[in-house]
Image 1: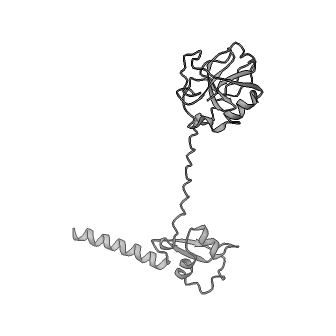
Image 2: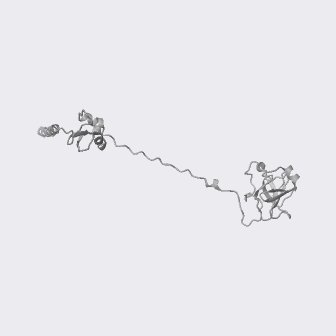
Image 3: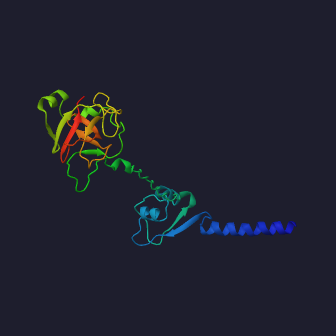
Length: 217
């Protein structure tokens, strides 16, 4: 047992002595200078520190190296490879397609030129339907007839309407102006009137073509 240990130690001593004689470190790489080499290029090529190579090889003038010169580059002078910056993932925002829907309904071949804002049943989506009025009730009564969007607008008073709507002072239960429209415009259609946004609730024998009638508030 003792003989085996001594033999191993003897073998390791020979290897260490050989490395010492040749000047090669077990933790270093050797590089032989070639024509056109510079210390900075050698350091960059071997991913090593320039100052570390100069210090390790005891180089007094970093601009003076000779072809065939052996340089030791230990692992301690190696630079860690630069990590590639991870590309940031950009998440595209989802677009709410409902924002692109228009409420305007255009009927092909329709004889009237009314600005229809909705063909659905009456619902109070506008907090103030009269905010987009182009005239006042008094001015309309004074003029008798108002032309808007290529349509002829007149006014009337009434308590009962063709679709059974109840008059709330000239407005329906949702606050929209009650409109009598030609028979080809469905009940519940929202339409721009001179007094603001209205909803079709009535008909009239004289209401044809581009002629509309609205209840005076």
